[in-house]
Structure formats: C-alpha cells, structure tokens
Image 1: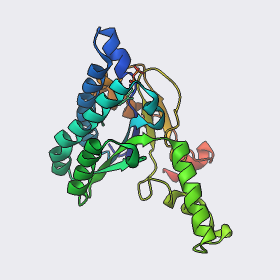
Image 2 (image 1 turned 180 degrees about the vertical axis):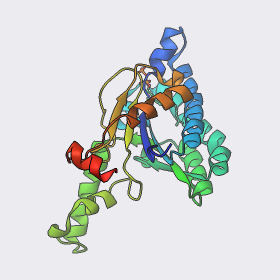
Image 3 (image 1 turned 120 degrees about the horizontal axis):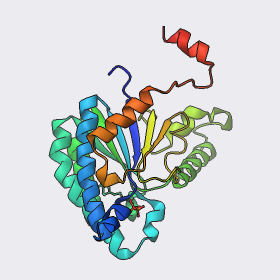
Length: 242
Ligand code: FPP
C-alpha cells in the first residue's frame, strides 16, 4: 500500500465492441461504461489514489455519427449529476480538461454545476478529458506563451518546463504515474502526451465495461513490479530507496 500511484490516467476503450459482442447498441456500451467508471472510482478511492483522469471524449470523437455523439453528451450530463454526491462524500473535486466551448449547453451546464459544487474538495480530483486532445492542448499552450512573450509578461529565455506546464490544462495536477488503456489497443491516441513523459503504461484486452475492482488491482500490482528510473541507473535507484 505504500507504493500506490497518486494519479492514474485511463483510456476507457472498448465500449462499442463490448456492446456489439452482445448484439446491443453502442450507446448501451457507453451506458455500461458509466457504471464501470463508478466502480473504478470506488476502487481507486479504497486504494488511496487521489487523481483519476479519464479520456471521456476526444477531439477526434466529434467525427463519430451524430447519434452517438448525442448519446455520449447525454450520458456525460447524466453521469456527473449522478456522481456529484459521491464525489462530495469522498472530498473529490471534478475538473474538466478540454475545449468546453464545443459542448452542448446541457452537458456543459451539468459539468459546470458539479465543478462548482465540488470546488472546495481537497482529497483529490476526478478529471474528465472531454473534447480533449494533446495536440489541441499543446497548440493552445504555445499560443498562450506567444501572447505572454509578445505582451512582455515573460522573456523567451524564461520559457522553461514550468512555464509550459503552467499553460497546459493540467496546471497544478501532478503527472500520472500510471496510464491504463483497456480494449486491446496499444497506443496513446493524442492523450496527455506531455504529462505521461515518465508514466508507466499498462494495456489490457479487457473492454472498459468489464474493467472492475479486481482489474484495477491487477494494474496496480503490475505497476508496483516496475522499477521507475527516470533516466538513472538501477543501482542509483536502489541506493536511493534503501
Ligand atoms: C471508447 O469506447 C469510449 C469512449 C469514446 C467514451 C468513453 C465514455 C464513457 C465511458 C461514458 C461516459 C463517461 C463519463 C465519464 C460521463 P469506443 O466507443 O471507442 O469502443 P470501441 O473501440 O469498442 O468502438
């Protein structure tokens, strides 16, 4: 228990295939995905994981059929309303990273409402990446830096890692130690590219709706078997941990 990651990022993939395998509509897969998210948050809380960032809707997902986009937006509103009390009970704030301006008013309203109600919570955060992609985020960060330099607020030489981090959506949130992707694909899909520079990666074939407490524990145990060296040698790391 003394080597539990503080922050776990998740790519919740496989809802559509889970539904198809059962002859059901893709939107039913997403509905089951919301339940899986609830289960996973409870399990993460039990372990003492403080930050969970979920890839809920990517910038590229706007290219899906409108019917599926509508179902997902409805579900986002429904899920955050349903989870608000649960977040308050665990002292967890809701944050959203992504281009909120593109969301339909109803989903946005539900998110803003939950963000405001949980803003005082201190234990940790549930971070939903919605209408998010890393390249969008990094481009926006570069624009912000350019504006700040042009306005004389910082000089070009003051552009360092901290200046970059502060202009990303995740300012103030520690980087994830572990990234989990369900659904069998082994790629990052434009997710948290800056933030996962040193994260351990864990891929599982399990579809997201089937990812429960036991599956999260498996991922954490696997993470605990890794040696995180951050560019140092194994001998250096072992000496530091003595
Ligand atoms: C990937 O499955 C999943 C998504 C695009 C959406 C994730 C959304 C949820 C779990 C529901 C809403 C969640 C919240 C937090 C309110 P896919 O559709 O790409 O599956 P496939 O690869 O099998 O087609």
